Length: 242
Image 1: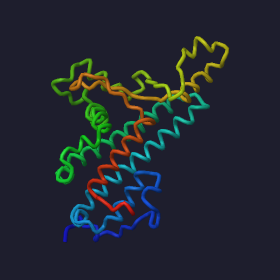
Image 2: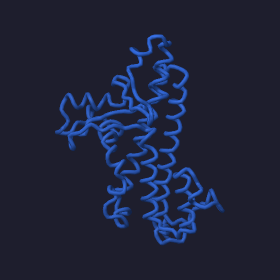
Image 3: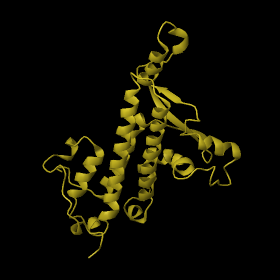
Image 4: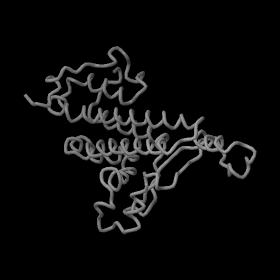
């Protein structure tokens, strides 16, 4: 019997009796999905591989929630240097979990079931440059031939408070020069308004594609989770009734 057989583990459905499409969190839905797939041959030899990927999804959910809690605190209180740092720490942790899932998607196990997993994970595929050039290790510490001195510095500050803040307007909001058209308002209120009305993001340069890549956790998280769950569904096909 394989050491990675699901039958070796006391693993139960955390949402027994609830239809999968009624489980809002996709990482939690994936946990129920694998429990309801226990009779599939895949889980008789690769349960540990796939459940680990689901824990990566749960990690993404956790770090997104932490990031959003910090962001929402900035709606009414101007962020301190500590808050700004904490936001970046959560972004780095999120991208490292994303990098783990990307490595899972490139594994021989997944390739046997999904010939071109990167086509299932377009958002992850775009964002993996953050992991490769900053979060897993920085290009400034371990440069590749394509990493010029200037590019190494750009990569190093992409998720650092040394870099510039990047904001993208939320749907329905028309950006203005807050500090020129709202001179009668309190400066702290104007700063909080920026966090309420725009998404905080991060940017890095992908030299291979010759393009800047932007990462907005609040926007990208749902896409990432849909893609990750789609890959789990390909590996573990279930009947629609589940």
